[in-house]
Image (cartoon, rainbow, N blue to C red; front, top):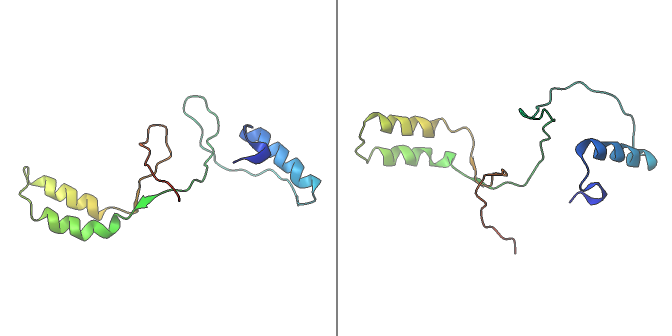
Length: 112
């Protein structure tokens, strides 16, 4: 919900937000900053990172169980067991199951 800024480009919204803050005396200063900003490979427009509520599945807590269960299976070829265990041990964060991407599979969750 962008309120009165909904539908505006990021640049236009920034301009109006600055004016609105200035109008109510909440703007302390405006100054240029230098920062690296990712751009789209195709059209070269800046990539804006938008925070969204995400759902995660705790996967790191399953590492020991993955290894235990992998040892119960007869693997063909043998090295695939090592590959699975190495992968499980290398997990640095939990799995984001609610990816906000165009081609992501939506998950059916309702808030009641």
